[in-house]
Image (cartoon, rainbow, N blue to C red; front, side, top):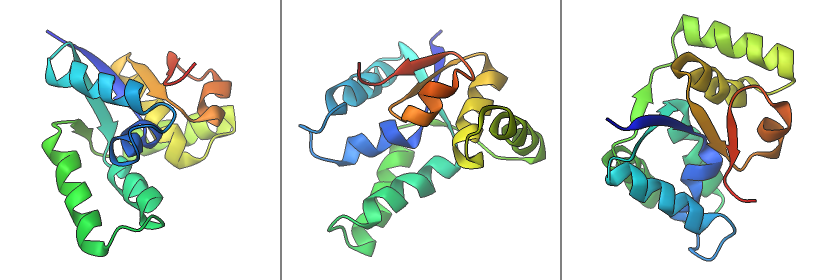
Length: 137
């Protein structure tokens, strides 16, 4: 059985950027480990909106952004719905560690699952709010 690994949008967005971008190789290696069932990638559902928002300023059309959303779903990420419990946990994390609620939702998901969070987000990494692994060294 594979272990859960929570990812945030800083990881997933690299799957749709230039393969030479910093951290892209590591992000793809994590996706490959998921496909090979060494790990199970997990994320709260707002990751989809964060990835689309990050790519919105690139030269992608609305149709291409819709295709990105479909590809994210096809990757088989285990989605965690944000309910009132996870929202309350994220609010506590945000307040305690000085994170945005959006970032804190990734941390709260990792804490809920007793899982590692892989991120390239410096604010999350500085927070030390859960077990963290930097996407890039």
